[in-house]
Length: 386
Ligand code: HEM
Image: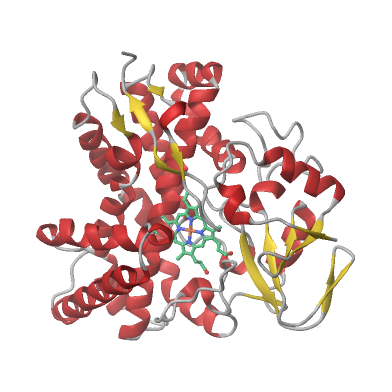
């Protein structure tokens, strides 16, 4: 069936979930005239697409516009090159490496909370959610401290690309490429304890990345690793605001935060959907899909599918299993999900310990409009009630 469904418009709705339920129940596959693509919403169909990376490819972009970057980025590669690239990056976010980042995450979190005036309203996104993941990624890459502010301003343009002019996005991308190109020879000569140095000097048996591949990797860390996590924070704070009982329980027992984070990601997924292109004629959910057609997967709808999640609208931190698609599934599963989870757990625990009664101002918050992101542009935050 054909329906006027556009993920871009849905992302900014306060409550798109009743429509997602209707799609799941009555129209599990629809053709969107507006975007020239098929849209699937049931868990089982999303899983089918994610599990067959040879039939449903990423190389022609994973967002509805089909955007791909100039440098080889992991996320938009297919076999066999994807396996080669992922193999080279395998060691980047091992549990050991991620655990070592815990003190840094806690320190940056506390610094950002210290900088908030407890009695004054601020914008949660610019005061906390945006800067935390950028600080962590720049540290992982080992960028010089003195360059961080300039780096961040260019990264911000890339990260918020949907709201910027194309020229400034290209300019920002070039600046970052030039910056990384400049520091690569230094790192090769005098390796440090950072990820770039590790990738330039791989362990035996691990493929070495070319300079272009390293540039692509740095960009993807900035694009895939920062806005997503920032939106994870904004969405979690929004859920806590609308569930005061849950908030009280988490203040009393912070050890439940780990499970709560999974539920925030499931219920308000920062990446509500991504797409693939069919590499040959096939059938999906009873419809014929022609070779070259785009198929968009509504993760945010599948994550509330009652066929998989009992009582899906309720937040149950102890839910087990909790196999949501917030980080995807299959060969492209988020490379740094363990890092994102740790940032969210530590950040939210620290926020609740410091400001258990924080308030948001729904009349003035502004949601992102995007094909592939759900979150807030701005989120007025009062650390203590006025
Ligand atoms: C809450 C935060 C995050 C969310 C919701 C998220 C979500 C996702 C999703 C859905 C995918 C799958 C893409 C696909 O199937 O096409 C993905 C892949 C990826 N993510 Fe994340 N991500 C987050 C944080 C991060 C962070 C912190 C980093 C790195 C610092 C990162 C790096 C990547 C990379 C490199 C890929 C590509 C993997 C591949 O194609 O093999 N992500 N992420």
